[in-house]
Length: 167
Image 1 (cartoon, rainbow, N blue to C red):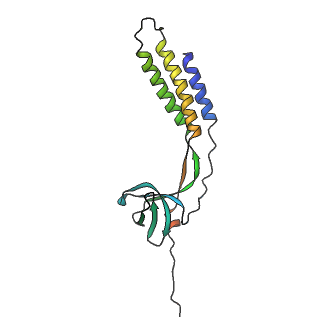
Image 2 (cartoon, rainbow, N blue to C red; image 1 turned 180 degrees about the horizontal axis):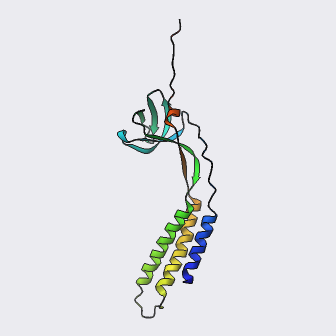
């Protein structure tokens, strides 16, 4: 069982090197902010867009197709603002890589029909594939970045004001 000791140690190192959790600061929201809007009635599910404007009952966003979309306040179920680049979950990438590597090693070893294959060849190939996959998944996770999104209270988006006529 020494074959599996190395992947477990590498996984422990990956978890120990995970970045610290950041405070949930409220990100600023204004015209030109990158947002992700969810309005199921309009077919928008976590759709990235740029906030153009918002009034008392409608939010106007520009989607990636450069089209202006008007979203009624009643249809908007969730809005998130881009809070900058965030790290990818390295541990998840490492585990996926380890699993895929182990599977590839086991399949490769199972195809060995030569009678001179060592008795524990499947275990060795699976372990080596797991270690290679773990290293590859960790490297991919460490080098990749993704956007970090924070939810916004919908009331922050809408400006409600009262105007009185001048005499």
